[in-house]
Length: 81
Image (cartoon, rainbow, N blue to C red; front, side, top):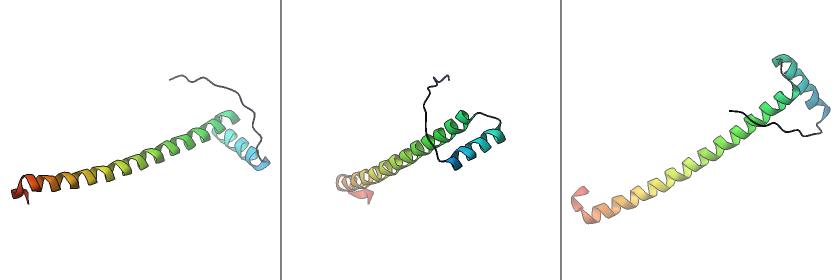
């Protein structure tokens, strides 16, 4: 999967620049790759959290529906009790 790269200029505190440089050297990649990787990990974490919340909400809705459907089934077919 190819991605288009764009350029942007950011200002960072000196300690973050030093940290970025350390990570780039340690991983043998560019500063851009370090920053890009960090931002991608943040985006992935946000997506995962949003999906987890969505699944929690869906589970609650399904539980309510099952409870309602069960109550209706007991009215229609009393021997289900």
